[in-house]
Image 1 (spheres, one colour):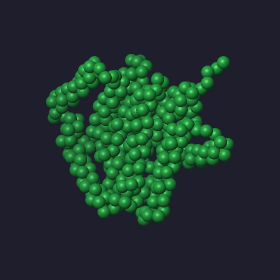
Image 2 (tube, helix red, strand yellow):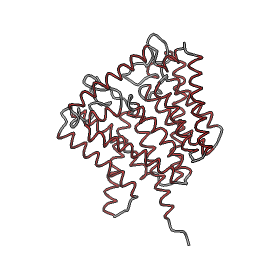
Image 3 (cartoon, one colour):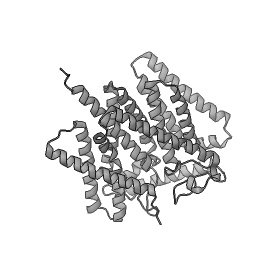
Image 4 (spheres, one colour):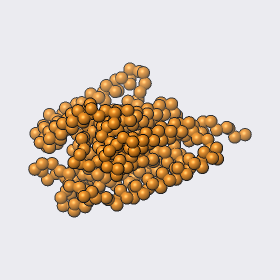
Length: 402
């Protein structure tokens, strides 16, 4: 029997309130003739089109359980609502700075809690290790407890740390306070303690992307800096593997550990099965919500790999539209980074592009992006970025005071 956590009820209630308020604002704005920024209208229109197409498919084509379909809409679309709601709520740069500061502060509490989970392990009650209905995440024939910070499974928390890492790294680049280096070390350490290969690789991705964006210039110095960073990271990885090749950590990282081998085999098997299914059902798909967190575990075709899940459940046309929507958000952030002189917008854009690069790559094999904590945080931060962009655009076009 599926158990519903109190956190799920609270989040769904908040999302419902957002939906009702957003609908009211759009309705009122239309009849009052209130103009909206073109970029906000474009993203709102694209989201509405996705919602309408998904609902048409849900009612006219899909045959999987109706509750499953509704939960699929919630997971894939309604949990995006913070990005549409944030620009209505955050109207000043100070309010945006405050919400980002609050998110980072709360996240650090989770980071320290996760470190305690790792070191105290089974000394803690199960309720402080995993959510209700979950089993403790560990490794075969070991006493290692993989931290979750009660955000879901280990890969969800590990991916969440990369969002926080990217935000602090962007702050360090543009503010330069040394305390951010200490915080980055702590967040990176908590990520490593999850012993999740994808997210540890993600640390490198985030560091490289942020470095690339910050220093990018068509000069020899940039080429030397970037090459030096890549070589330094390669030497660190090579040296760690050579020096500690018999340790559990290195065996886990290189995929030689038993659990890792089994996990990798399952990933490839499911990718093959989903590809075979897709060959004969590429238009209709398996049904909205049939493959994600809302799907029945007994009938799922693929349990990991967010991009393939989206395509398998929605079919090729709608699935690609979903993927293009995600890509459009990342490209918008990349453009904002290069086009704006706003310090806060550049920080947000750098971080968003960096953890998008990780999520897009990792989603080929895992579904950490689809975890509620990550998915909602991702779209909330995009909404904050969008709000900051709108504020900058309005100030740029504002008439000078006489």
